[in-house]
Picture (tube, rainbow, N blue to C red):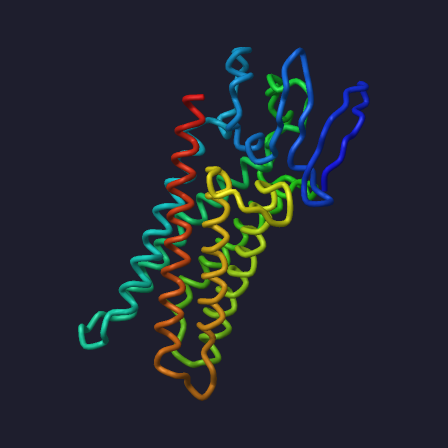
Length: 286
């Protein structure tokens, strides 16, 4: 969607976004050309105008907050990658399933922390204003918020709930039995729910950054971040699908393929997290 709108002040504004969302605004203000982007706005990445005005920045939009969020995602991804690699080791090495499941569960914890930090940021993003130096914080801090008109809020909410589902998916193997019914109900089902939510989250983050339903902009850092995350979400989805335990058993190669795909998904998220950390460092220098 691309359109030219007339603001209530009489200002002509060019807007873009995957309908019904508006994720990009372009307009002239005080002799300057302003380009407002939804992702940069909620993460506090476009702060040049604020710095000129010496305006305060909420802690959830600081460089450190963004960097540590990326760092937690990176840690969780590395532990998931480690768990998937350990799962592929030959059985004669004697590595029990329990230590591997502990690694996966430990990985789910920083994932959940990072997911909530990112959602808290989206829940408290200020509303759009014409003046880019206006950084007034919300009157009341929101723990979850309700902004269904924002693809960023929808994306981070889906991701956070998905990480909670992965907490159950990785903890339950430590306490439940080996029966196929229990495995599918207590382990596979939460993992599938988490994967579906991650896939929805990844695509919403992608369209928020692309300003359309699809784009190819591999030279842009923000596009790289959401694209590799989206690829990771697809890999997680495929891994969760293959992780279903049928009543009559399954071919030997299916669990291995599921673990390979899980590792690829974790690697995609690690790359996205590392790029997020790079993005926050670059924003601090702008």
